[in-house]
Length: 247
Ligand SMILES: Cc1ncc(C[n+]2csc(CCOP(=O)(O)OP(=O)(O)O)c2C)c(N)n1
Ligand code: SF4
Figure 1 (cartoon, rainbow, N blue to C red):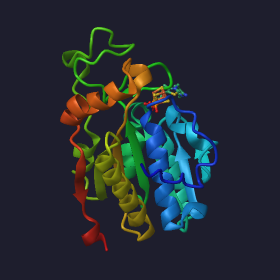
Figure 2: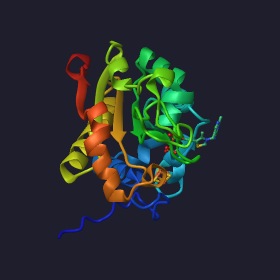
Figure 3: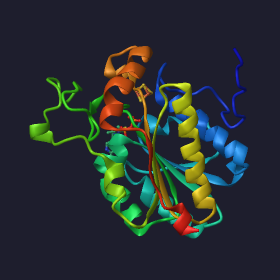
Figure 4: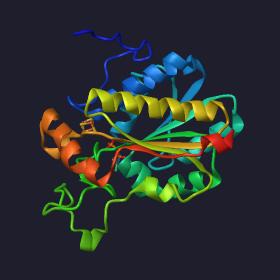
């Protein structure tokens, strides 16, 4: 087996639970920024939750935004410093619950930004509460009998919604469940960063990610759960690419 060397941007071991998808996604983002030679010129806007645990271990400049406010903070930074690569990194509780307004309005405005959205179906750090992305029937600490869609609605599909905005230029959904999926996800992240550098406008990449700790599953069972259940509700792939017309 050939082991790939870790990106020099990952300056310390990460703080995520074993089997957590954030660690893989961190590595992909680090590889992309490193390979593109833009790490020194990048500002990451971290959210709250486990989605912010990389601020000490991932060697780019980070700022942490209040819960849900990452797209607004990223907008301010990018407008003041258009020469910087600015990206946000959010979980689903952050991006689609408390921060839905910021997510929508940043897309409406078509900011020239790269938004990364880690969908693990729960509020991870605070104990696995139901999120807008929780699957129908999924048990969480706030839906102990399983999510009842007659009371809480269906899982939010943000890519379907954003695809209706003409200001949005690039949308993709990746997975981290196997090597092919991980490689495709890296390609989506790279495209989303390239789009910003080329001034093509708003790019948003969702990544389906395991949270074994709150799902009560082993890391391997968590991967199977994504393949067999989560990916059926949230099909992976490139959803929208208007970057040709944006050139
Ligand atoms: C205004 C505010 N409300 C609530 C919290 C508590 N809080 C911290 S992390 C978190 C959960 C975040 O979940 P998610 O965005 O899905 O990220 P994950 O932990 O799953 O990566 C919450 C509710 C907070 N920090 N600030
Ligand atoms: S609680 Fe879940 S999202 Fe947070 S680090 Fe652990 S596995 Fe990852």
